[in-house]
Image (cartoon, rainbow, N blue to C red; front, side):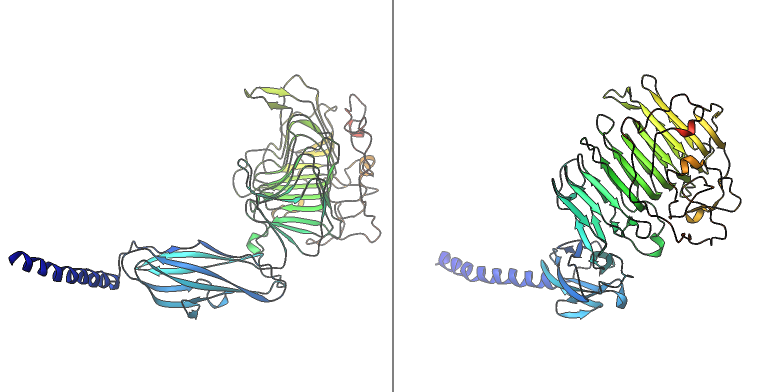
Length: 533
């Protein structure tokens, strides 16, 4: 009898004990967790609206907010940081508003937040990417979830491929494909836009290309890039931040990267502005100096945290080129190659830190696997040009024996501490003469009234490129550099002549004469390295 009574008591007690545990557990769930170290979990750290709007409209996304603790959490405030001026609105578990207070989430439970973005894509004051955030405050601990939406109607190119060892990229012109980028809408690039081998990208006059952080344009080996702006409608490359404080800020994107083309198709960049990146243009060949050229005409490269124009084992021909305001080299031509520049302005007054590198650097070797120099011939020619800046030395070379190497300056202003008495190398070079630019602090590299560069250029060389970077005639008395002085010209914008001619292309001499070594001659400035018609 005692045993039976005992087991009857147990049968009654067990359900009561279970009920007690359930009730206790339920009570714990109602206890509010006030621990200041408590953090919410989110389904994503960035709510992105990748809809490309064509008219004023809105799109909705959702955010899942989790309480993964064993106690109830009270979110004292959920708020859109931008307030009433934000393009974003939210609905927190059925409650709409810019700011919602005292939102409870039970233990191991969650809530939904629905976020809406309303965009006017035709508002040019919008940045290309509109950013905001949602702030969450729990027990004095503040967390944020980012909000991003595309703010203008544009062609958005978003990287969709990742290969180990390469940056994220998207192929925009595939093999045997020719693609045109037009000026109807700007292009906004996230990651790298890649021209695949044997593909061609042609960029039309007036096209604007904007790069997100760490993004760039890459013409892979055997591909071709043609940037065909005009003086009236240049092509523009810059970062995607449009706020005024970003207009002259370096380092907002990566670079334009051009590789070799062994079947001889030239890369061309004409009438373009490339600004506010890390490297303006990088040209590169892996093993040998390229058969093809990079042709630069009427091109401005400025505000680069690294190098304006960087080359390795390449061939470049340039006229009316401006390279300015770079944290490293203005122009660095390495590993040998063939280079010719006329009517070029290299001006480096970098003021974001100390610059220890010159504006112009030449090198005639590449390192092997043991880091020993392998000599490669270099042929460099610069005429009717300016190389100047705020360093005492703005021209340096690093040369080794074992390869034919020649560099020649003719009718130039050159800032250097070198001995320039050898006329075979420095013919009619004005040593350390301040060119007196209009205002280099504003990237205005036109010549001031008293500039020694005025009327100092060689007429025969100038006749190869008879108009300056703006289409102003530089004859019959040409000036040094990319800009021709215009008496009475205002200080904010250049005045173009009414009867100017826009030249569509360079007429290049045959390979035997192109970049021909000048050798010994009476007038080094009259080399046939470049003919620009």
